[in-house]
Length: 113
Length: 109
Image (cartoon, rainbow over all chains, first blue to last red; front, side, top):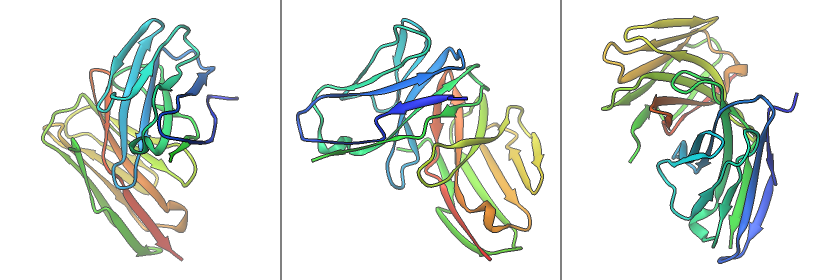
C-alpha cells in the first residue's frame, strides 16, 4: 500500500552542495512529476515525465535535473543548491494524462543555508 | 505569474456556515481538479471536472466548471471543522498541471 514514496523527508544543505530527492511509485503509473510548494504560491511544476526515457520541463525547471530510467523511479537532482531552492518538494504520479488523478507523496522539506 | 488565481486566500468561518471558493484563469483548460491538503501531507484529489458547465456534487461539496472552461468554484454547505484545510484548484493542459495559490479554510466549532 505504499503509493508514492519520497525520501528524504527533511534535508539541510549548504549553498553549492548537490543532492538528489528520490521518488518511487508502485502503481505502474506512466506519468510522474515534481512540484515545489512555497508559501502563498500553491504548487509549481518543475519537471514531468510521461514514461520511461521521456522527460520535459515545467514552469520552474532552472537549477533542477531529472531522469526517468524506469517506470517506478523519478529522482530530482539539485546540482548546486541555492537559498532560493528552499521549499517543500512534492512528487506525484498519475495513470492518465489530462484527467488523471495526481497521487502525491508526503513531501520533502529542503532548507538551503 | 500564477495562471490560476484563487480567492479568497484565507477564510475563517463558524461551523454550519456556507462558503464558496473561486478559481479563475484567462486560459482554457482541458480539465480542472480540486485538491485538499492537510499540514505535512500531500494534496488529495476531491474532484475532476471536464465539460464546460459541469456541476459535480460530493456530499456537502458542490463543484462547478465554467462554460468556457476557464474558471471553477467550490461551494461547501454547512461547513464542519473536518473541512479545515488548504484547498487547491489545478488546471491541466497537455500533461502540465497548473495549481492555484490555494485557499486556507478554518472552520471553528
